[in-house]
Image (cartoon, rainbow, N blue to C red; front, side, top):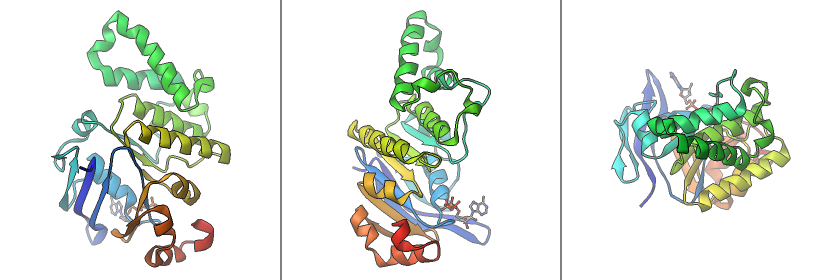
Length: 250
Ligand SMILES: Nc1ncnc2c1ncn2[C@@H]1O[C@H](COP(=O)(O)OP(=O)(O)OP(=O)(O)O)[C@@H](O)[C@H]1O
Protein backbone atom coordinates (compact mmCIF):
# COMPACT_ATOMS: atom_id res chain seq x y z
CA UNK A 1 0.00 0.00 0.00
CA UNK A 2 1.25 3.49 -0.82
CA UNK A 3 2.02 5.86 2.01
CA UNK A 4 0.37 8.67 0.07
CA UNK A 5 -2.20 8.55 -2.71
CA UNK A 6 -3.27 11.63 -4.62
CA UNK A 7 -6.36 10.57 -6.50
CA UNK A 8 -7.79 12.57 -9.41
CA UNK A 9 -7.22 15.93 -7.72
CA UNK A 10 -8.46 19.13 -9.36
CA UNK A 11 -7.77 22.64 -8.03
CA UNK A 12 -9.34 25.64 -9.72
CA UNK A 13 -8.67 29.27 -8.79
CA UNK A 14 -11.44 31.14 -10.62
CA UNK A 15 -10.66 30.53 -14.29
CA UNK A 16 -7.21 29.00 -13.63
CA UNK A 17 -6.94 25.22 -13.37
CA UNK A 18 -3.79 24.81 -11.25
CA UNK A 19 -4.13 21.03 -10.83
CA UNK A 20 -5.99 19.08 -13.47
CA UNK A 21 -7.07 15.52 -12.52
CA UNK A 22 -3.66 14.68 -11.05
CA UNK A 23 -3.11 11.18 -9.61
CA UNK A 24 0.17 9.95 -8.18
CA UNK A 25 1.57 8.10 -5.18
CA UNK A 26 4.53 8.14 -2.81
CA UNK A 27 5.75 5.05 -0.96
CA UNK A 28 7.63 4.43 2.25
CA UNK A 29 11.36 3.95 1.74
CA UNK A 30 11.46 5.85 -1.54
CA UNK A 31 12.50 9.30 -2.71
CA UNK A 32 9.93 10.61 -5.17
CA UNK A 33 10.40 13.73 -7.28
CA UNK A 34 7.63 16.06 -8.41
CA UNK A 35 8.94 18.11 -11.30
CA UNK A 36 7.57 20.45 -13.93
CA UNK A 37 8.10 23.91 -15.41
CA UNK A 38 7.16 27.07 -13.49
CA UNK A 39 3.43 27.24 -12.83
CA UNK A 40 2.91 23.49 -13.48
CA UNK A 41 1.01 23.08 -10.19
CA UNK A 42 3.66 21.51 -7.96
CA UNK A 43 3.23 23.80 -4.94
CA UNK A 44 -0.55 23.64 -5.25
CA UNK A 45 -0.29 19.82 -5.13
CA UNK A 46 1.83 20.12 -1.98
CA UNK A 47 -0.77 22.45 -0.46
CA UNK A 48 -3.51 19.92 -1.18
CA UNK A 49 -1.46 17.05 0.26
CA UNK A 50 -0.54 18.92 3.45
CA UNK A 51 -4.03 20.38 3.93
CA UNK A 52 -3.42 24.08 3.20
CA UNK A 53 -5.59 23.93 0.08
CA UNK A 54 -8.93 22.16 -0.30
CA UNK A 55 -9.13 20.51 -3.72
CA UNK A 56 -12.04 21.41 -5.97
CA UNK A 57 -12.45 17.65 -6.41
CA UNK A 58 -10.45 14.46 -5.83
CA UNK A 59 -9.11 12.72 -2.75
CA UNK A 60 -5.89 12.46 -0.73
CA UNK A 61 -5.17 9.29 1.26
CA UNK A 62 -2.34 9.06 3.77
CA UNK A 63 -1.38 5.84 5.54
CA UNK A 64 -4.56 4.20 4.34
CA UNK A 65 -6.94 6.90 5.55
CA UNK A 66 -8.80 9.53 3.53
CA UNK A 67 -7.40 12.85 4.80
CA UNK A 68 -8.95 15.14 2.18
CA UNK A 69 -10.88 17.04 4.86
CA UNK A 70 -8.39 16.55 7.70
CA UNK A 71 -6.84 19.80 9.03
CA UNK A 72 -3.10 20.49 8.65
CA UNK A 73 -2.20 19.80 12.29
CA UNK A 74 -3.96 16.42 12.32
CA UNK A 75 -2.14 15.36 9.14
CA UNK A 76 1.11 16.44 10.83
CA UNK A 77 0.23 14.37 13.88
CA UNK A 78 -0.39 11.39 11.65
CA UNK A 79 3.17 11.71 10.33
CA UNK A 80 3.24 14.26 7.55
CA UNK A 81 6.07 16.80 7.66
CA UNK A 82 6.59 19.70 5.28
CA UNK A 83 9.20 22.32 4.48
CA UNK A 84 8.36 25.45 2.52
CA UNK A 85 9.95 27.39 -0.35
CA UNK A 86 9.57 30.45 1.87
CA UNK A 87 11.62 29.96 5.03
CA UNK A 88 9.61 29.59 8.23
CA UNK A 89 12.26 29.60 11.01
CA UNK A 90 12.18 32.20 13.83
CA UNK A 91 14.81 34.71 12.63
CA UNK A 92 15.70 36.19 16.02
CA UNK A 93 16.29 32.80 17.66
CA UNK A 94 19.49 30.78 17.34
CA UNK A 95 19.63 27.78 15.05
CA UNK A 96 19.63 25.45 18.09
CA UNK A 97 16.68 27.29 19.70
CA UNK A 98 14.69 26.88 16.51
CA UNK A 99 15.24 23.13 16.59
CA UNK A 100 14.58 23.06 20.36
CA UNK A 101 11.23 24.82 19.78
CA UNK A 102 10.30 22.25 17.12
CA UNK A 103 11.25 19.38 19.46
CA UNK A 104 9.17 20.94 22.28
CA UNK A 105 6.16 21.49 20.04
CA UNK A 106 6.29 17.85 19.02
CA UNK A 107 6.58 16.57 22.60
CA UNK A 108 3.95 18.91 24.11
CA UNK A 109 3.46 18.79 27.87
CA UNK A 110 5.94 15.94 28.40
CA UNK A 111 8.59 18.63 27.73
CA UNK A 112 7.89 19.99 31.22
CA UNK A 113 9.32 16.86 32.86
CA UNK A 114 12.96 17.16 33.99
CA UNK A 115 14.22 13.80 32.62
CA UNK A 116 12.85 14.74 29.24
CA UNK A 117 14.72 18.07 29.25
CA UNK A 118 18.04 16.22 29.40
CA UNK A 119 17.20 13.90 26.52
CA UNK A 120 15.78 16.91 24.67
CA UNK A 121 19.24 18.43 24.44
CA UNK A 122 20.63 15.18 23.05
CA UNK A 123 17.82 15.16 20.49
CA UNK A 124 18.53 18.78 19.44
CA UNK A 125 22.23 17.98 19.02
CA UNK A 126 21.44 14.83 17.02
CA UNK A 127 19.10 16.72 14.69
CA UNK A 128 21.64 19.51 14.10
CA UNK A 129 24.33 16.93 13.47
CA UNK A 130 22.14 14.99 11.10
CA UNK A 131 21.60 17.94 8.74
CA UNK A 132 25.20 19.14 9.15
CA UNK A 133 24.42 22.29 11.15
CA UNK A 134 26.19 21.56 14.45
CA UNK A 135 28.69 24.36 13.89
CA UNK A 136 25.86 26.87 13.24
CA UNK A 137 24.06 26.01 16.52
CA UNK A 138 24.58 29.41 18.18
CA UNK A 139 24.11 31.61 15.10
CA UNK A 140 20.92 33.61 14.75
CA UNK A 141 18.65 31.94 12.20
CA UNK A 142 18.34 35.16 10.19
CA UNK A 143 22.15 35.43 9.89
CA UNK A 144 22.80 32.10 8.17
CA UNK A 145 22.89 31.63 4.38
CA UNK A 146 19.63 30.67 2.63
CA UNK A 147 20.79 27.15 1.76
CA UNK A 148 21.79 26.54 5.37
CA UNK A 149 18.43 27.89 6.53
CA UNK A 150 16.74 25.25 4.37
CA UNK A 151 18.67 22.57 6.23
CA UNK A 152 17.41 24.15 9.46
CA UNK A 153 13.85 23.80 8.10
CA UNK A 154 14.56 20.14 7.48
CA UNK A 155 15.91 19.64 11.03
CA UNK A 156 12.75 21.29 12.42
CA UNK A 157 10.61 19.05 10.26
CA UNK A 158 12.53 15.93 11.36
CA UNK A 159 11.95 16.87 15.01
CA UNK A 160 8.44 15.44 14.60
CA UNK A 161 9.86 12.16 13.23
CA UNK A 162 7.58 12.21 10.15
CA UNK A 163 6.72 9.15 8.06
CA UNK A 164 6.37 11.33 4.96
CA UNK A 165 8.51 14.37 4.19
CA UNK A 166 7.21 16.94 1.73
CA UNK A 167 10.18 19.07 0.69
CA UNK A 168 9.60 22.17 -1.44
CA UNK A 169 12.81 23.14 -3.28
CA UNK A 170 15.01 21.92 -0.44
CA UNK A 171 18.35 22.30 -2.21
CA UNK A 172 18.00 25.86 -3.45
CA UNK A 173 20.88 27.96 -2.12
CA UNK A 174 23.13 24.96 -1.45
CA UNK A 175 26.51 24.76 -3.19
CA UNK A 176 27.60 21.64 -5.06
CA UNK A 177 29.28 19.93 -2.10
CA UNK A 178 26.32 20.71 0.19
CA UNK A 179 23.90 19.42 -2.46
CA UNK A 180 25.78 16.12 -2.71
CA UNK A 181 25.67 15.72 1.08
CA UNK A 182 21.99 16.64 1.04
CA UNK A 183 21.28 13.96 -1.59
CA UNK A 184 22.97 11.37 0.63
CA UNK A 185 20.84 12.52 3.58
CA UNK A 186 17.66 12.06 1.52
CA UNK A 187 18.73 8.49 0.69
CA UNK A 188 19.37 7.83 4.40
CA UNK A 189 15.93 9.15 5.36
CA UNK A 190 14.33 6.83 2.80
CA UNK A 191 16.46 3.90 4.00
CA UNK A 192 14.92 4.43 7.47
CA UNK A 193 11.54 3.71 5.89
CA UNK A 194 10.33 7.29 5.47
CA UNK A 195 8.73 8.44 2.25
CA UNK A 196 10.25 11.57 0.70
CA UNK A 197 8.31 13.61 -1.86
CA UNK A 198 10.18 16.61 -3.15
CA UNK A 199 9.59 19.47 -5.53
CA UNK A 200 12.99 20.37 -6.89
CA UNK A 201 14.37 22.35 -9.81
CA UNK A 202 17.92 20.96 -9.56
CA UNK A 203 17.59 18.21 -12.17
CA UNK A 204 21.02 16.74 -11.41
CA UNK A 205 19.91 16.16 -7.80
CA UNK A 206 16.48 14.84 -8.83
CA UNK A 207 17.99 12.47 -11.38
CA UNK A 208 20.61 11.16 -8.96
CA UNK A 209 18.53 10.60 -5.80
CA UNK A 210 14.95 9.85 -6.87
CA UNK A 211 13.59 6.32 -7.19
CA UNK A 212 10.62 7.62 -9.15
CA UNK A 213 9.56 10.94 -10.67
CA UNK A 214 6.15 12.40 -11.50
CA UNK A 215 6.27 15.15 -14.11
CA UNK A 216 3.55 17.80 -14.14
CA UNK A 217 2.66 20.27 -16.86
CA UNK A 218 -0.33 22.63 -16.77
CA UNK A 219 -1.55 20.78 -13.68
CA UNK A 220 -1.59 17.37 -15.35
CA UNK A 221 0.68 14.40 -14.65
CA UNK A 222 2.30 13.94 -18.06
CA UNK A 223 4.72 11.15 -17.08
CA UNK A 224 5.68 8.88 -14.19
CA UNK A 225 8.82 6.78 -14.22
CA UNK A 226 12.40 6.21 -13.19
CA UNK A 227 14.87 9.06 -13.73
CA UNK A 228 16.06 7.41 -16.97
CA UNK A 229 12.48 7.02 -18.25
CA UNK A 230 11.63 10.63 -17.40
CA UNK A 231 14.81 11.94 -19.04
CA UNK A 232 13.85 10.19 -22.29
CA UNK A 233 10.13 10.95 -22.19
CA UNK A 234 9.11 13.04 -25.23
CA UNK A 235 6.25 14.84 -23.39
CA UNK A 236 8.59 15.82 -20.53
CA UNK A 237 11.21 17.09 -22.94
CA UNK A 238 8.57 19.13 -24.78
CA UNK A 239 7.30 20.60 -21.47
CA UNK A 240 10.80 21.82 -20.64
CA UNK A 241 11.63 23.21 -24.08
CA UNK A 242 9.98 26.55 -23.42
CA UNK A 243 11.85 26.81 -20.14
CA UNK A 244 15.47 26.18 -21.06
CA UNK A 245 17.75 23.98 -23.10
CA UNK A 246 16.46 20.46 -22.30
CA UNK A 247 19.89 18.85 -22.60
CA UNK A 248 21.17 21.30 -20.03
CA UNK A 249 18.33 21.02 -17.48
CA UNK A 250 18.02 17.23 -17.71
N1 LIG B 1 -3.89 31.28 -4.79
C1 LIG B 1 -3.87 31.29 -6.13
N2 LIG B 1 -4.77 32.04 -6.82
C2 LIG B 1 -4.78 32.03 -8.18
N3 LIG B 1 -3.93 31.33 -8.94
C3 LIG B 1 -3.02 30.57 -8.31
C4 LIG B 1 -2.94 30.52 -6.89
N4 LIG B 1 -1.91 29.66 -6.53
C5 LIG B 1 -1.40 29.23 -7.71
N5 LIG B 1 -2.05 29.77 -8.76
C6 LIG B 1 -1.80 29.49 -10.18
O1 LIG B 1 -1.84 28.09 -10.34
C7 LIG B 1 -0.85 27.64 -11.24
C8 LIG B 1 0.07 26.64 -10.54
O2 LIG B 1 0.86 27.33 -9.56
P1 LIG B 1 1.89 26.57 -8.61
O3 LIG B 1 2.49 27.61 -7.73
O4 LIG B 1 1.22 25.42 -7.98
O5 LIG B 1 2.97 26.06 -9.67
P2 LIG B 1 4.44 25.51 -9.41
O6 LIG B 1 4.61 24.36 -10.32
O7 LIG B 1 4.65 25.28 -7.96
O8 LIG B 1 5.33 26.74 -9.91
P3 LIG B 1 6.83 27.20 -9.46
O9 LIG B 1 7.76 26.14 -9.96
O10 LIG B 1 7.00 28.49 -10.20
O11 LIG B 1 6.82 27.35 -7.97
C9 LIG B 1 -0.13 28.90 -11.72
O12 LIG B 1 -0.74 29.31 -12.93
C10 LIG B 1 -0.40 29.89 -10.63
O13 LIG B 1 -0.37 31.21 -11.13
